[in-house]
Image (tube, rainbow, N blue to C red):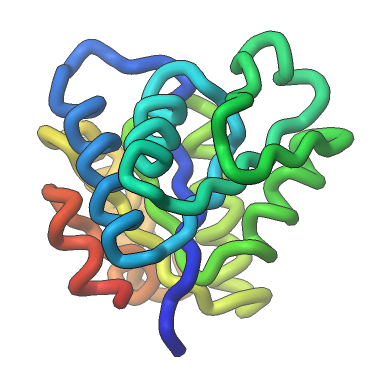
Length: 179
């Protein structure tokens, strides 16, 4: 199956490392060149905004899905292809999963981890089998990856997480795993 869309989970803030924005923008350009649509949280700030802007600047297709409660917080991106305002976070996540063929996780906060772990859990439960990639920009997720290893080593996971998560360090690597 040819992948036509990625859900990308990432921060509505930029973070402190300049490489985070660099990777978000690079990923947006790579996706646009490969004619892969972006499905994301719909914001115009932080890494979300940088990713969506890079996609639009490169002629890509961008679908934003934002819940009503976050319209003010994340400042909905009015310059994207398609902005969908939904009732709540649960509807947002379900819609993002339905619209994507695979998911990519960039640096972010609690919401980013919530989205990643829900999708990973659904994958484990065989609700879907979509690939999930962590972009470990400058080692941002090193501690999380070590913790997931600990969960497996201590017997809390049913199978190795390495069967469900792909870890990349550069945006260019992602395409080789997913396309």
